[in-house]
Length: 269
Image (tube, rainbow, N blue to C red; front, side, top):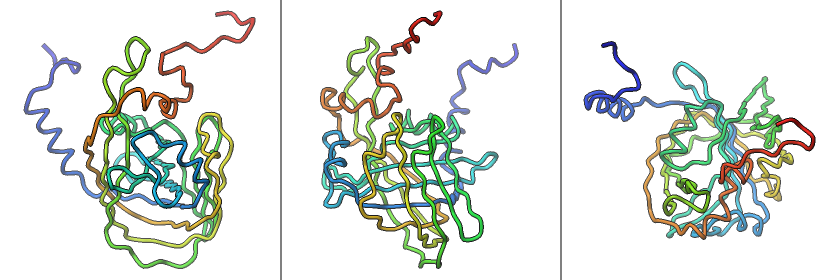
């Protein structure tokens, strides 16, 4: 019988896939990073417990094009500063990706809030423009002019916080208590340039990042970097505490209950 590709894989095939994924070469990306101070009350409002604000109400946007073998990837992140258990890190609100393959591992393994979208970085001489868009709305755009090269930072460690969960089958709460994940990234930079410019946040009902305005822009850089990541479940979170924030993961909060879209009045269903 010819091989049935949806059939069970052998232990050797599973082990080979696990070994290959553990030996990935450095994958470099070119991206724009912008940081600013925002409204501290607005930042606190988006943090599900047990996350808490840090000493500064910071927002970090990363818009990158990743040099993946075989197909380039646009990857974005809009994150706010947060703290948990004595660890300061970042809580991403939305992470648009340009390919489905980049979504599945991040969402299903780590609980990352990834969604399909458009992510671009364009440079023309000294002019640079980067944006993240979904539903034809570029809800974040960073634009400016590239200046001098900056000293390369030492390899660094960064922690991102994610909530991993599955909505309940009966549409009420979760199948099991969600878990809080600490995802630790080790990052190396091989090129870094200063950018003088601004950040534009556009209104979007699907990605309402405009609620976290740019009150004081700290810096914008254009760089080339590579990183790895390791995740760890640090605690289980009560479903009642997280449920009011679940809509952050979905364009339509009713998706949690798998509700069909309403038909316009008078339309034929």
